[in-house]
Image (cartoon, rainbow, N blue to C red; front, side, top):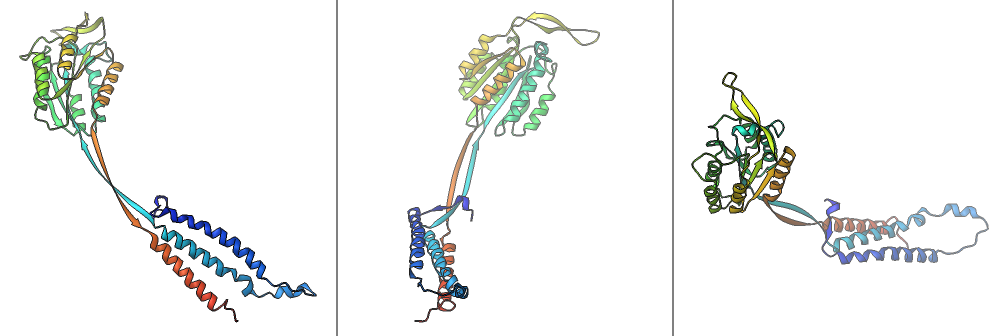
Length: 333
């Protein structure tokens, strides 16, 4: 029995315990009143007072304990056991990430792509109950990882992403359409695409707004993120034919925010602009709060009667009191 969790079915009967101190006071007063007053020529005879007389109040103590236990038993003490059934409705999320060469822009530390990967990985790890997939795009699109609950695998695949994996360009429409394709048959209560890019749609076969309408048809919300500082930024403009390395130049940051906003509005999502890594982290935190898994908890409680132990103890004390009164403390008329 866990005494911290005990309750009483008839708790009002516990008021009966107030009788105990009243009976104790009454017994104390009447006991001393019954004692005979005898004059002795010497106090030495008091040392011979019978131990039976001295310990006779033990009978009263036993009766009071038995009465207390009976009152508690009548109040029906109970303990309870709890059980919970938890059902979780997760969210299906596709991260659609731009991997074009411009994502190597150094206005983020160390560059836009690495910052985007780092923040997205933290987001994936925090979404314990959701299935998450990964689509990458530049001049074309590719499913890097289908929907899965293996978040460690998703984060490992983020590490493998590099520019140059696909034909160069920025096919926003293709990247969005591929993500829609991965989510359209999902039965999750909420379907979400997080599309991140730093440029303007300049390649691919699907118009971004057409892809947004597809998302709306399938009940998919699209959160778009424009990545890049305002003003000028150092970005790759060509490749050195000798070393094979990118040649960087200062160029004006050009993000098609109008199209990204329209995509989000069409699909009941939201557009964000990230001008640095800290801002990007705040954006993912905002999306994390907007899209939370639904957790239903159904609790069961079962009551267990505990009065029997109190009743048995009271019965034992009554038997002991009766036995002592009829034997050791027996009075002869």
